[in-house]
Image (tube, rainbow, N blue to C red; front, side, top):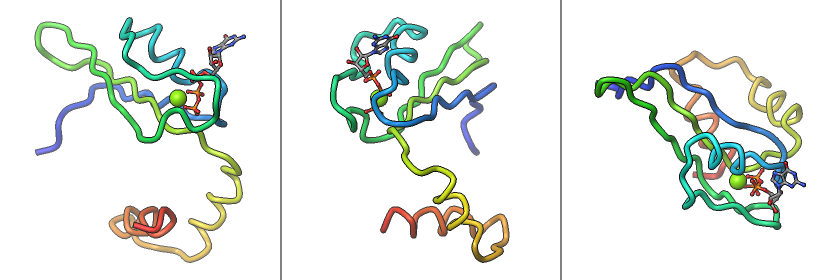
Length: 95
Ligand SMILES: Nc1nc2c(ncn2[C@@H]2O[C@H](COP(=O)(O)OP(=O)(O)OP(=O)(O)O)[C@@H](O)[C@H]2O)c(=O)[nH]1
Ligand SMILES: [Mg+2]
C-alpha cells in the first residue's frame, strides 16, 4: 500500500533559485543541501509533517528543472494511457 503523504507539496522550478532553501526553512532541517551552484539537489527528497503520528503534509524538494514547457510537450507528443506515464518519464531520464 502506498504511504499516505497527506497533502503533497512539491517545490519545483529552475535550478539555483532557492527551492531547497525554502524546504530547509520550513522543515527546520539543516542537512538539506543548499549551494551557490546549479544542480546542488540531485534527487527528490520528501519530508513529512505529522500530527498524532499521522502524516498530514509532505513537502518535496526536487532537482532544478530547465525548459519545462519543452519537456512537457515532448512527454505529450504521443498519447499514452495513465499507467504508461511513469515509463515515459523514465525514458526521458534515460533509465
Ligand atoms: N539573495 C538570496 N539568495 C538566496 C535566497 N534563497 C536562496 N538563496 C541562495 O541561492 C542559492 C541557491 O539556493 P538553493 O536553495 O540551493 O537553490 P535550489 O533552487 O534548491 O538549487 P538546485 O538544487 O541547484 O536546483 C544559494 O546560494 C542560496 O544561499 C534568497 O531568498 N535570497
Ligand atoms: Mg536544491
